[in-house]
Image 1: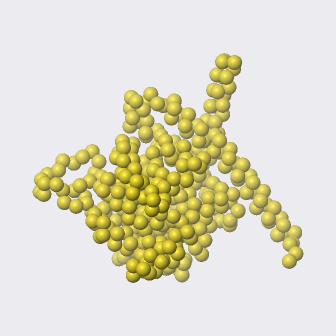
Image 2: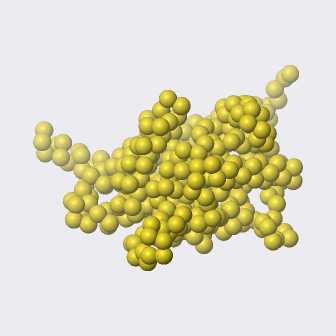
Image 3: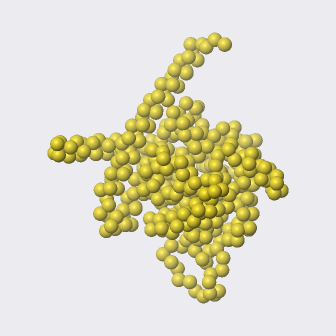
Length: 370
């Protein structure tokens, strides 16, 4: 089939745009990530004198870095529409966020749609696959205190022990509030067949758009971060428990990401921008943590129910192009998530100015020494 001139021009334009976007992303990473690290090295005395202020500044820098990632998709026309409960109402409380996982672009989508949720981004902790540690963003996540979990049955028990220790050491000491995890333990396309076989064997629902979640990390987070009076009976029965500085985990936010036609965006598309502008839909449901059971069997059932509901939500979305209304509502209400282009340009400019500043500083000391 012959290629027309118009088609050739379109392909050429797409390739040129992708090349320019890739070059910008590389330059962005080369100035932003080293600047983040160097700023925090310079602020180590503050960490000793006033740890709270240090982690506040680190959180602001972390949010800016995530905003830069969000900008790559935003400027390519990859926007977000939100449905369900308004999570801004609980943005200052501690919450665990459960997300379905379809592709690498899920993380980028969350980086974008959480930007306008108050202090959430700078005070959040991510649970992600250990391979992410070896990416360009790995050093940032290590410093921020995210947890890298190794998948596989052989590592599972040890990883849960490490997760508990990590939460006890870093979550409250760094004033974290939201913790984000993907309970399915992998991408939909990789786990669907195994999950369906497990469901058939155990007389569980057949799921196409999500997979059955794994309990381990969710259970550890609840046991470690929920205040005793929130989940289960406090020791001492009716004894009055003094309110601690932290109220503990208060909410579980069930988050469902849906892509048009079930075609997820991956990180390559997010960076290169070769896909046509796409609206990703994100649905939230908020559950009080006091309503989440603590016992393993009951918690497993509760978690399975959330993903069965996700299956129904996604089935409805793929059939109608919209999520169904919440219980008690007659019509589903959507909210278009927006970012300020001026703010994004300002952050990007600050990153490049910082890179130039550090370059000049190193040049100065180099000439002084040699």
